[in-house]
Image (cartoon, rainbow over all chains, first blue to last red; front, side, top):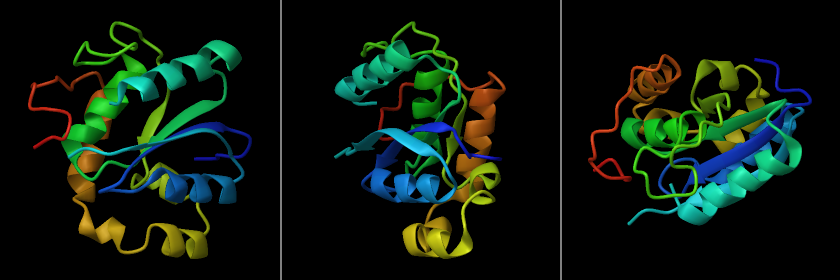
Length: 42
Length: 115
C-alpha cells in the first residue's frame, strides 16, 4: 500500500503498538500523521 | 474506544474530510482491533461514544497487516515494531480486521479490552 501523501490517524495501545511507534512508521513511509491516540485499558 | 478519542477523530474528519485519510491501529488482540476498526467504519459498536451510529467509512488497517508493513522501511520497522510482531497473535488480528472490512464482524459485548 502506498502511504505517500496519506493523512493518518494513529490509534495505538499501551499493551500493543503505541501511537508514537505507528506515527514514526507512517512518517517514514511518506504519510502525514494528523492525530495520535494511545488507548490504555486496565 | 476512548470517548474523547472518538470525538477527536470526528473533529479531524469534520475539519478536513475523509479524503486521503487512513486509520492505522495497534491493539494487542484481535477483538479490540476489530472494535477500533468497526468504530471508524460503521460506528462505535458499544453505542457509548460520539461515533455511535456514525458511519465514517474510513479505510482502517492494523499495523501488523501486510499492506502496512510493506510500506515501512525495514530499519524503521525493526526499531519501532521489532519483536512486537511476534509477541502478538498477528494472524488472528489480521483475520479480525479483514472480517470488519468484509462487514462480517459482530460485537459480542465481551468488553473493550477483549478479555
